[in-house]
Image 1 (cartoon, helix red, strand yellow):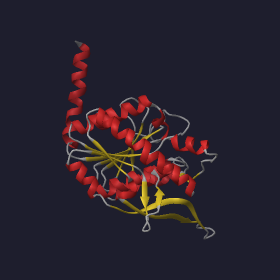
Image 2 (cartoon, helix red, strand yellow):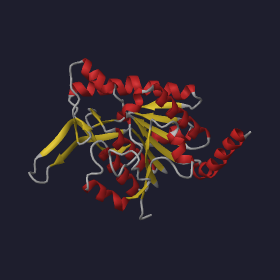
Image 3 (cartoon, helix red, strand yellow):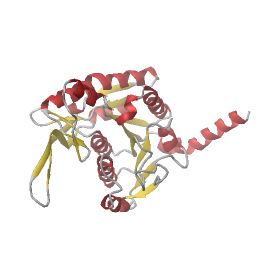
Image 4 (cartoon, one colour):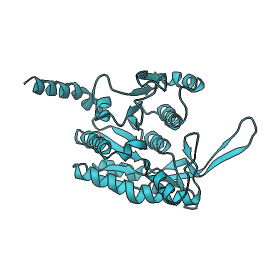
Amino acid sequence: MKDAIQKANVLIEALPHIQRFRGETVVVKFGGSSMDNPDVVRDILKDIAFMSCVGLRPVIVHGGGKAINARMKEQGLTATFVKGLRVTDPQTMEIVEQVLNREVNPELVAALNSLGCKARGIHGEDIISVRQHTVTDPSTGEKFNWGLVGEILQVNIEPVKAFLEADLTPVITPLGADANRQVYNINADAAAAGLAERLQARKLVFLSDVPGLLADPKDRASLMSTLNLSEIESLIERGIIGGGMLPKISGALKALKAGVRKTHIIDAALPHSLLLELFTDKGVGTEIVNDAL
């Protein structure tokens, strides 16, 4: 009986959160090593199915996990990352497109449908317009690019909104196309942030390989539960935020400034971390809020 009462208490704790977020759009990005563990993926998809069932409107943006790197290795190619972004030549782009559009995306859509969550896949290049992502070194003036890596210019959110209005969960690949229909790779964190911004989502959630933002990257117990926008730049300057976390934080900052209420970074490997973060009072990861709102 105690176990049954405890379960009922969990549901009661979730009730105000469900009521608050019902009808709201939540963009969820997941990728990384979590995608290589079928049990972790299944738990994440169950959480998303639950979100949809209780009236939230999830939008999924996914990466390719280690599948892209593994396919590159099979073909004698080496994956190279600079500032958290994959250097993408035409041969790599062909692999990225194959893995994301023709393998990972249909698998996720089929798995969600099997859980009773009606889902549809969207190839990112059909809705996201990009140009080549280029940066300039402030000290030398020298320009650098990552090859076929795109910077988002526009997102046609109408197909996404149409799916949501039809109670379908969009599952979107992080790809874009330029004016000549050349397909570009987009960092999945940036793609999720761009969609959240343009959809004016209530929340943007990054499922990560770490529990959240850590004050000491070597100590998982140093989790920072809540941060304000004003604190983030200091953390970047101090080197606490770097590497693969930079695209997440850059996207989170831009989305928050554009009106997204909160962004979250949580551990994908923690069972049901998505539900624990959204529907419990304490949460389990890092939430970043716009202190100006």
